Image 1: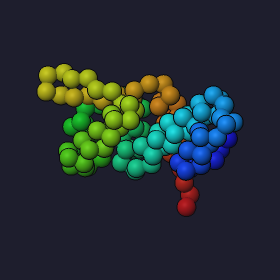
Image 2: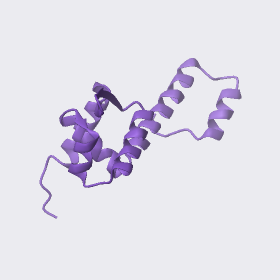
Image 3: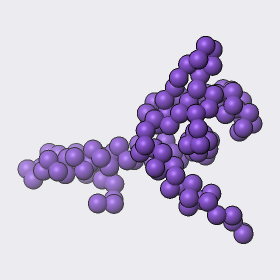
Image 4: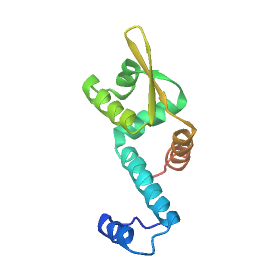
Length: 122
């Protein structure tokens, strides 16, 4: 099912007599997928994930690569942590970030292949 069920329709389906456990699981999975895609939909967050797909990086390194202020990078990394898309490791005062799991790595890899793998001739 590719359409996302609106909250109102979802409520009506849940209250109806014909709700199956499979439909309930499908609606939960659609919500999880929607949350995941919303987290990816911000340009800076997507850039951060692409950089982290290459290797673990420190906050300072990410700031320097993207030429962004620390506050901006930290805000986007916090959102990625909240969505469980990245993990952290502390070494002294330095915080390192990495992709949280292979699912995130696979999605970022596909996005990279589609949008960054070819040189655009526009």
